[in-house]
Image 1: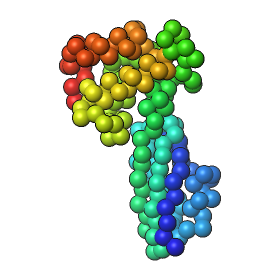
Image 2: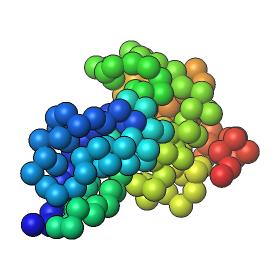
Image 3: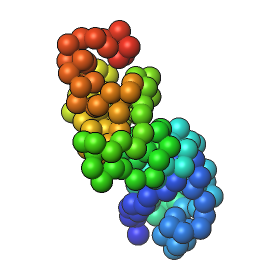
Image 4: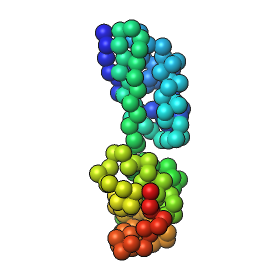
Length: 158
């Protein structure tokens, strides 16, 4: 009866209730042990929805694979807003610092195509542009050009 369960849980705040408990209840695993392991592995995403895959075997053993939240969710969490702008070219909903962009880029880097933090940051900035989020007070597209010009190489080095 080995199997796999895929759920979205709030980082560091999983509990034995839905959606996890009902999925794990009929399995041979210790639900509380799974919940604790998930919370330990997701605490860096404090409250942000995180994709989690639990693989379990008939003997009650399990392994957990924690995904990375979508870039937009990380941006919203870091900047503290609920929804992006309906007109991202002119109505801006938040502003991020270069350090916040770097933090998001480092969290998301394993799931991105980028080879380094600088290029991961450029991918994050692209999402910011589509959400109406400025960086260091300027339009995300202008900021990306300055990154391309090497202006932020020191701040974005790994």
